[in-house]
Length: 186
Image 1 (cartoon, rainbow, N blue to C red):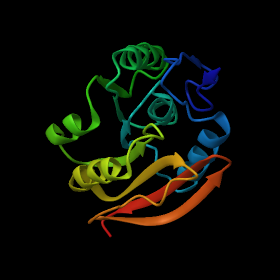
Image 2: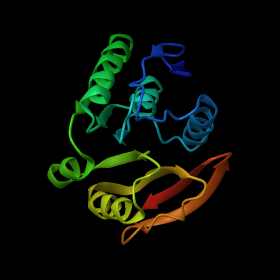
Image 3: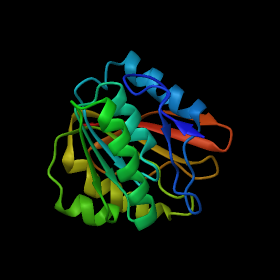
Image 4: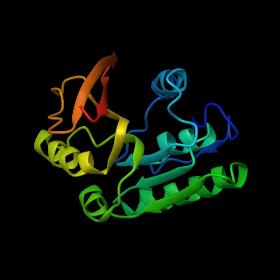
């Protein structure tokens, strides 16, 4: 079962879309959000959750004080799940602006405006490295200076090609999952 770990909506159960998605484990989400809170990067942040799946990462940020969260998901089943989960979290966290964009990541980024403070990219592990690099290239000009970008990939995947405007801060491995932490503006 996937759930919101902490914050205003802590312990709230989330549904998952099922086949074709790989939810971030509670252990990894807790590690992510402990680090983000220690760096004071969630309160009032504009958060973008790309390849959202159930929306757990973005909705966890909303529960912990993010001001605006957009969940981007191209699968219609997963987008419906994101919408239902966002409604549940929104009922408990009414101050957060929550939106689901039911479209592909590149289509969303191609028409988006900037100012994102925190971005999660948790693409399917089979997404080609070149496709991830294209996503990051489109994302870079939309980031606020100092924004945090987290990429979740298989531990067998190489470091993402960050391109211009995003620099690697650190890498952390959790079994089969690697988190790549990066910062905009460098």
